Length: 100
Image 1 (cartoon, rainbow, N blue to C red):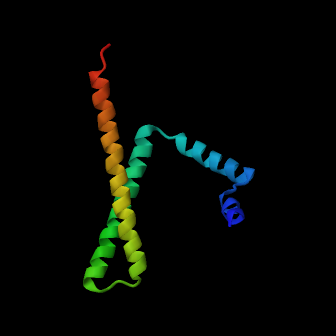
Image 2 (image 1 turned 135 degrees about the vertical axis):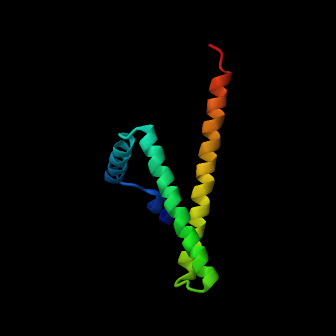
Image 3 (image 1 turned 90 degrees about the vertical axis):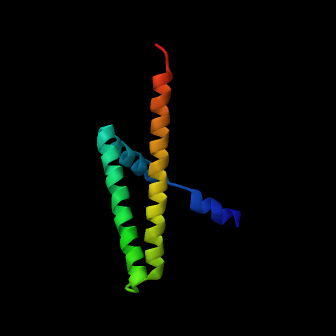
């Protein structure tokens, strides 16, 4: 059983290199661009979640499992966005309290 768990968690050096390159590409943008992209993604997930809820309410849902996943993703992304906002506000307040 331990061998299976270890096998799943192993990454090749090529996987690590690929992941490192992806991170570098994303870091090239400015903070404002990254923030806007993240907010747009959260907005898209919220729209999909609302569509899924309306489909469930009207009985037009094609796949209940996929609808539940869309709603869950929307909820999780909103919670994450709110936590990031709270941390940013706390950091800003801390900077205001800092004496020069």
